[in-house]
Amino acid sequence: MKFPFRIPENLPRRILQARMTTAAFELTALALILVMEGLMAWESRAFLAAFYSIVGLLIASSLYRHSLRLLQAIYKWRCLKTAVPDLILIALTLSLIPKPPLMALVAGCAIIYDLVKIFRRTGAGQWFIGRFIGTPEKAVAFSFIVLILVGTILLMMPRSSANGLSISFIDALFTATSAHCVTGLAVLHTGIDHLARSDIGGFSAVGQIIILVLIQTGGLGIMTLSSASIALFAGRLKMNSREVMLTSVGRDDSTLTVVGLVRQIVVMTLIIETVGALLLSVRFWGIFPSQPDKALWFGVFHSISAFCNAGFSLFSNSLVQFRTDPIVNLTVISLVVLGGLGFPVLSALFSFRTWSDGFTGGLRQLSIHAKLVLLLTGIMIVGGAVLLFIFDYNGAQAGFGMGERVWASLFQSVTARTAGFNTVDIGQSTTPAVMLFLFLMFVGTAPGGTGGGIKITTFALIVLSVKATMRRRSDIELFNRSVHPRTIHNVVVIAFVSLMACFVATFLLTWLEPEVRLERALFESVSAFGTVGLSMNLTMDLHWPAKLLVTILMYVGRIGPLTLTLALARRTPVGVSYPQGRILVG
Image (cartoon, rainbow, N blue to C red; front, top):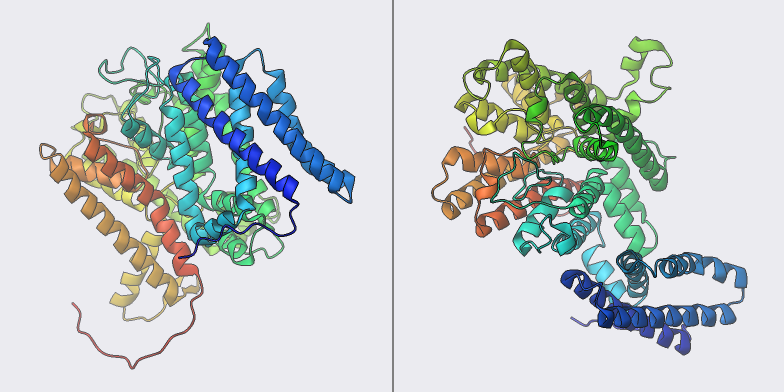
């Protein structure tokens, strides 16, 4: 295959040379920053002299390039406006000279931003865009891989570790994947306290911030990230990408733009997370009375982790110590449920237009999707809590009082669907309770939200399809509406692929870890694929091949069903139609 390194003909040679020189300086500076951070050599005069020299050359080269463009531009003001972001980053970099680590952070962000701009204008960049992110499903897979790799590199830095030593590549990759795929499985402690295992390391405040950023970007929605990736590299959004994104979040408003939709998602997320952070911070202030900043940080971290259904906690035993705490329980449950409902349902619930005709009129105005999601969410939460109360009575809840049992059953019924927090020891659960956990984890939450699983709408359509078949009906009816046969076909494909992924992963996990019981291996596989994060005390004891397997499973579980849905949703040309044949089944 020919690799087209074609240089645009209308680009002046001097500007092109300046751009290539800047790119060379930027790559050198980025490599030096990584080396200095990896060696923690910010006190070394030799390294600092080299760092300041390269950054100075980088700034001079960038200014030279912008001055050439300004001199040759017809509309000077327009050209100057395009250079404003670069000039701001240069000014900010220069202002941080007394603080080399912060200066390196800002300079690194500016370098990556400029390198992306340069790369996408080259022939190789255009070839790469068409080859790897030309379709929405490719953009989804690529964006997640890039952010996971960036997170892995950052988590391997000594500054991210609690003991100041670099963690292994596989542990950093596992943690970055678990955080960005909002899973919650952990091979290291996110936060270290007196209950943490002494043989397991943890992350520093810097590492926790990196994990939180990965959680937030992953939780904002896979289609939001894919659209941002397309816009970043291609410079604009194609119509098919816009249609896929609007469909994926359940909106049929033809006047709503992609930018408007992303803005609505971000604003709604920040409002909900802010309210949750304030409530949790007030409660944690009682635990850390002399450290209000720590209470605020714990509140913000757990609020974002809960809404994004990530399950990461700064307490080494998750939220076990808050088993009967009404503020923590109700706040976390509310955040998990709101995040799992999905943005289409939240948008309808929080819209004034929906409830303008009263409660009854509002229910009538809700879409079929919103009605189905709300109904099934309520059934699964209440039904799961009742069954866990019964099945785990002599298991993980043994010795609890009545109040503890009620709170624990309700909390685990909510979080088992994909959040990953726990207030009981899941490893002590009875076999029936474990089977119920597997069902809740595999089904998951609603489409368009922050959770995982095959989605409750997928499960509902499978049940309705079975019901229609047993009644010998060709159409599937729901709220006085029929479901398109192609939707049922997609549902079957997603459910089958998900089942096979969990089966294969369990088989390989029992092979790689022969001492692990089948029950624990199956639980770990379903938890990883459903991006749940619950574990029967197995994750931290896995060897590196098993860790790599679970890492791949978390990635596939996060993007697999969604990218498969996008691929099935794309229009394909009509091919040859053959005569129908009969095959006996059953």
